[in-house]
Amino acid sequence: MMRIGLAGAGLVGRRHLDAMARVRGMALSAVLDPVMADDDPLPRVQSLADLIAQSDGIILATPNHTHRPMAEEVLRAGLPVLVEKPLADTSDNARHIANTAAETGTPVLVGHHRRHNPLIAKAKEIVDSAALGAITTVHGNCWLPKPDSYYDQAWRQAAGAGPLFINLIHDVDVLMYLCGPIVAVQAFEANAQRQAAAEEVVAATVRFASGALGTLNLSDTALGPWSWELTAGENPAYPKTEQSSYLIGGTHGSLALPNLTVWSQENGPDWWAPISTTRYPVDSIDTLVAQLEHFSQVIAGRAQPRVSAQDGLRAVSVIEAIKQAAQTGQTVTLE
Image 1: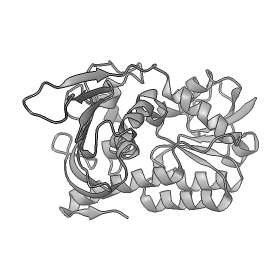
Image 2: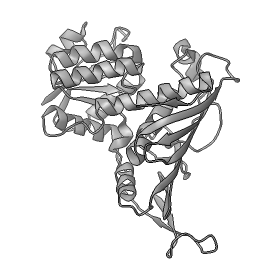
Image 3: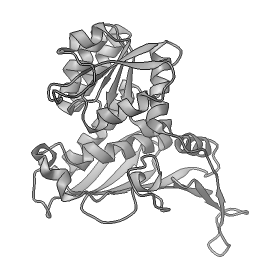
Image 4: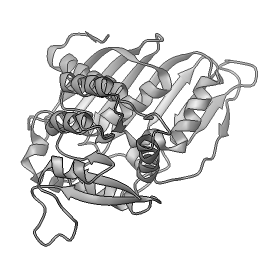
C-alpha cells in the first residue's frame, strides 16, 4: 500500500482525501494541519518531518506562500511531492522549487488537474494533428461568479489571492499546453465591486511563441456560464452548462472546448460556404482521481510528472506578467 501524506486539510485538501479513497493501492498516512478540529478523526502529525517519515509521497494543499519551504523540505528528504497550484506564490519561489527538484532528482507534480482530463488529451491530439491548420488566435474565458460568503475569509480579498492565481492560472496552463508558450502580455484589471486589494476582472492580450495571439477574460463578479468549471463537468459541485470556455482558431478550422467541437469547411476557408461541425465524444472521469493515479506512477518511478515544476513555473510567470502589465500599463515579455 502506497502511503500518502497530506499537508493542508482545507477545501482542496479534503477533495484530495475523497479522491485518495478511490485510488487502488493508495492510503492516507497522516495529515498535517494546525487548525484541524480536535474531534477530527483523521490521523495527524505535528510537523512536516513527521509526515515525511511516515509517507512515500506528499500532497501539499497548504497556502501558496508555504509551498516553497515545504516543497523544498520534502524534496531534500527524497520524497516525490504533488504541489497544489499555483506551484508557489511568486515566480522566484517557483523557480527555487524547480531548481531543488532538479538538484535532488526528485519529481514534482503540479496540481493542474485539468491536464488529466481526456478532453484535454483529445484537444491536444486535434491541435497537434494540424487538422486546424496553423493556430492564429486563441480565446479563454473564465466568468465564475462567487457568492459573498466566499469572501468572508479576509485573506481571499488580499493582493495575490484573487481569481488570477486561484482560477485563471488553470486556463493559462491548459492553453499553453495546447498552443505553446506565452511570451508577451498586455492587460487591464478592475476591482470596482468589492473594492478590495484582490482583482475582480482582468482582460489580457497575449502572444504565443508561435506568433498566435490570444485573449483571456476573467471575472468572479460576472454572472455567466462561460468558465471551465461550469462547462467541463469535472466537479459535480458546479452546475454544468453546455457552453464553451476556450476557442482555438486556425487557418483550416477552429476548436471549441470543452465540448470538443471542430468547425471546418470541406474545401478550405470560404466565407460563402457553410461550416460543418464534428464533435468528439470522450469519457468523463474524475480528474483528481486520475491525477492521484498518475502521482502513484510517479512515486513508483514508472512515469514522469505530466505537469512538471517547469510547467508550474511557466504558469506562475505568466500570471505575474499579467498582473504587472495591468498595474504598469506596459507590455511584459517573458523568457
